[in-house]
Image: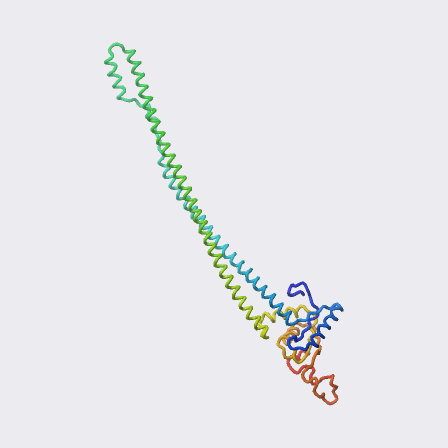
Amino acid sequence: ADVDGDGWHSWVFWSQNFRRGSETSQRMVLDLNREVTRTGLPGFVYTQSILWDDLVLREERERVETRRRMEEEFERRWSKVHEGLILDKERTLARKRIELDRNRRKVEATRPWFDFGNDDASDPDSDSEDEEGAAAAGGDKKAHRIRTAKQKLERKMKKEEEKAKSRLVLVEEFEARLRDLDLENEETLSQMTRDFENNIMRSEGGAREGHKEGLDGALKALTAMQERRQVQAKEGVHGDLVWDLIEERVREAEIFVACFSEDYLRDEVCRREVTTAHRLGKKIVPLVVDAMPGMYKPPAPGVPLSGGESWWPPKDEIGNFF
């Protein structure tokens, strides 16, 4: 399987100690890999430079993933806070609308009303004036009645006109009061809305600024840790990430070729690779590319030098796998 997602799958994993191995053995492994690849079994020689490239690439992915994770977490948290602020805004505005509407109804209840039924009542002062005028007029009653009726009508019309004007003024003043109250209520609600929106914007700005500081701090701490890890890797001290990278490469392969030498047996990375391949059930092929411990010692009686009973399998824990 393409474990690391790079679109390439190696069939053969060539495990060699490139830190201490001789140039001759290194060239031999590279040549063997090319020859085997030509047969249709692409191979992968895990050198220190490739391990370093994998480490740098994985650390870049770590930074990208850390940023993505923190951004998503912030957006989730801010979304909940934003929903709460919007809900508080709507509730407060709704309560304020109810309060303003209640006050308006109280004002509306004071609207001026007029009883037009009393407008036709006779004016006693006018009647007494008519009687006095009739007594003074003497015998000319008809002319006096006409003149009196005309005067009475004029007074009544003037009085009605004054009443109408007075009532109209009262109504206009009340309607103006209502309009002013409506404008005042509308401005109150608009100002509250603006205040809420400004508060939400300030809250979001503060939250994002705090998130940016937290993100910068997290990335700075991660970068510092990665730099320490790189220094340790150069010094041969490998952490979990290095072992994870090695295991991914071994897991991708079907065949594990252990390129043996005395330095290979002593190298921590190589020993870990062999252990990992055995644990993953890979087909392990031993290949001696340089001198092994005891290879050139005098052989046991009757044992040819090339047989190497004294040096094969390796006389340490790696030998248990071979």
